[in-house]
Length: 93
Image (tube, rainbow, N blue to C red; front, side, top):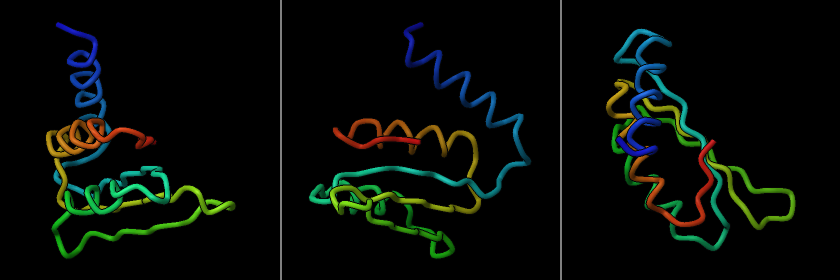
């Protein structure tokens, strides 16, 4: 088993124990202002009840993205993080 697989298995176990599922989950990302990754990340969340909040950094070179998604499961959370991890330059909080 590689490190990434072990990490995601441990993360999923912690998610499973942290709250009742399905339920809400707050994702947080930081992206460079000029990057097209903001739209790519937003496209992963199609549910109309999802709340997306964007904020510019003080110098305007970065944007933080907070996404409160409902009806999430530990598997869905892990899947989204795996997809976002493929985007170069995105910081996952």
